[in-house]
Length: 463
Image 1 (cartoon, helix red, strand yellow):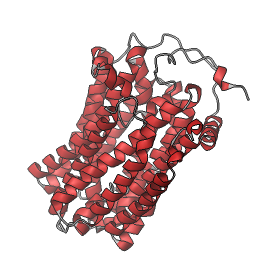
Image 2 (cartoon, one colour):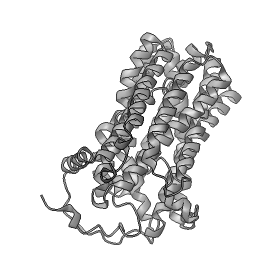
Image 3 (spheres, rainbow, N blue to C red):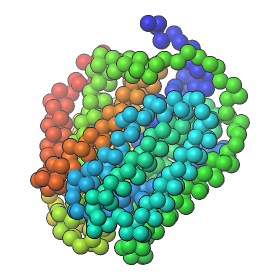
Image 4 (tube, helix red, strand yellow):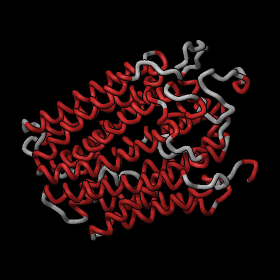
């Protein structure tokens, strides 16, 4: 095996100016703006590039529609039989493609026209939204036919998951083509902020539409709005025909196999304690700390006592929006930390805070406190993941960063459907409070272990 540290970097990435060194690294920057961007002060500098501004604006509108649809799909699925297992199944179907199709999606991004790939994916996702709306209006997604309705929702969710998994690498790989290298970090930071803002706005917008238009009409309107939102990003991508920053000619290099790259990333994480612990902490957080998100409809019904469909619909969307707002605040908090703060050393405390907040959230019977705790949970979870993200990138050598970040991404996104598969049935049997608290207990134990062994989250040379 050749010494990869002496490889010549691809021409489209610049190691010297701190730009991401691979598509995998760029994909990892989905949680918070890098600290160097905040310190430099040019928060919106990438907007001066027409192609990027179109790309960013279209993505924001589309993602707001997507988060609106995600909010009401949870309500629809829960309304079939008020089953936590049904929620878990829908979540599992929509997210499981991330576990298997992330690497094939990267291959497509490298070998096909990224712009056309994204446009076709958006067209198919628009058709999926129209299908959802049509089936809902025609009564095929209702409690009167719970099994067939659940199959339809899961199938459409799986389809959307496949399209998203295959096109997501192309989304991230487009950014270096739209801005010069000196603005690349800023462009990634703004893309991260766009995603978190869309999550918050989508939940609030879904609540507003359902409240104004009514229960049935409002949910149907959300699907139509989401379908229309895809037209904005399709139009934006269509307008971005060329960019002066797109490389005129790529140098063809021998590619490593996906398995070999992943294997080397795993080996590095296994032999470097700090990186391994940070990635393991991310996996534990995703597995046991994040199930509360898909269980929010059940919390509104079974924990807070809002039993009618109209009641738990409104409460769920409030909790969902508060959680998104907290996540956005968490992302901006990490981005605002001074450069000298060691992110990995803060992780043990944010994991501890997440566990404590989730225990309180699981058993709180008061709405106002649940809303506040939902926001705090979103902030704690996102802060922890942001700290992990930046810690890995700051401590991994450039020539291995993409491979190690591939492991990080799989532990973050790929574990989510497994979490849903485990905690859905647990909540169905014992209730959402017990399920959320059980996950928080595991998280608490891990946090206390890290606090008792502080050397685990320090560099090997410092131990």
